Amino acid sequence: MPNEFISNKITIGNLPVGGHLPIRIQSMTNTPTMDTEATVKQIVRLAEAGCEMVRITAANVREAENLKSIQSQIRKRGIDIPLIADVHFQPKAAEIAAKIVAKVRINPGNYSGSFHKAKKYSDAAYHNELVETANNLKPLLAICKQHNTAIRIGINHGSLSDRILYRYGNTAAGMVASAMEFISICQAGHFGNLTLSLKASDVKTMVQANRLMVSEMLKKGFYFPLHLGVTEAGNGTEGRIKSAMGIGTLLSEGIGDTIRVSLTEKPENEIPVAIKLASFYGKRQKQKENIVLSEYADIPKHKRNEVVLINPSKRVSGTSKIVRLFYSDIPFEELILRAAVTFNMAYENASPDGLLMENTRKSSKRTYKETALAILQARGLRFTKTEFTACPSCGRTHFNIEKTLEKIQRKLGNIKGLKIAVMGCVVNGPGEMAGVDYGFVGAGKGKVNLYKKDKILYKNLSEDEALEKLEELISG
Image 1 (cartoon, one colour):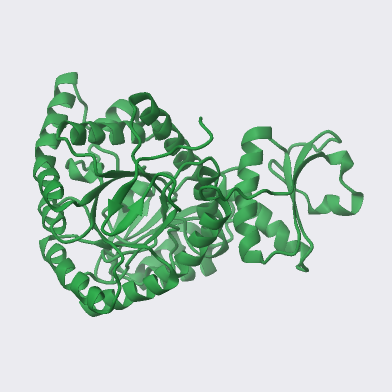
Image 2: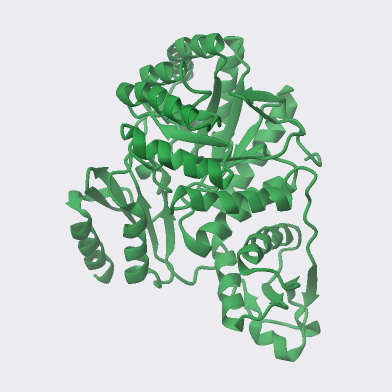
């Protein structure tokens, strides 16, 4: 892997992206797209917080058409940041949006009409579906060329097409293959105004997929800008640690041109975190950490009880390797971001046995041990409480996902080894929550479908009913 992946420079609206330019900060509205006033107000707040691009869901033709009103209103208020349409399933909505906004994000798994039916493909059937997908995409490419609209090929780990799942499985390699298929379609259509994203709720998969993507692009001579994000990271400290670990690790390697920190909170809360990550690890901003790899025997005896082991059942010896992260009087909100990235890099390079965090700023030993445990859990190394997969919500979400997640965390947040997904809608929900024990997925206005693994147990429950049923299922 080269020290830095220098992408092509493109322009999204009036914003240049890629090359040696700074990392650009992005977020997404979570208001109903047809509520123009609420959406405009949220875009204004995002812009004031430092957001440089805003994505808006366009679930259907009416919502795509309303992007014109939203854009007109924010321009009247002096906000000139580019708008991005987020489109699933409906090519017509993408084609309408492409005449209005600066960029359209399409998900190949949705765009090609995949519904995870575990189909089997002969080589001929595989080829024929690719040809059909290319034909479906042609009108959008023509419109985008005419209007100088960029496209983001947005690959989500949980919503790969059936043909990709058949050939590659739900893997990082499959994510890259999906991106390469759509790049090939765009190349054949002489369209190059592209950005790419390969996102997953699992940090390891997200990092692996983007590294593989860069490797494949270099083999082919492609240099498309990359948008980075960890999907469904959740909220609070855990959500920030997950996002930082994925985004910061890649930025530190010179990968990434735009970023979004996806938190199940107000969208404005994402921006300060993203700005910090870009300032720590963005292009020409390589953060140097005070990191030491020590043998357990060399750690002072009064510090040993603060060491958090990756495998607590493994006997500690004097030669056990411990990552020591030392920080000199920095705020906690900065420490958690930097520690997540630094530990991940140290873990990949040295395969340590434990983690010790130290900061000269006064705080309880318990705080640092809990942070260390959260870092290990984010990396999938040790699980000490419930693991939550939770989307940041968008205009497709029709229940209060922020408050619902907080309720579930309070009631069920300390069950070791349990995995729960709280998802805003059925667009990506069932696919993105692969591997969880229970899923709490929005099904319509105030309605929730309750899953056990990949099976729906209850449909169209109220939020309170769904939470009550979830507690009953878990308590047995």
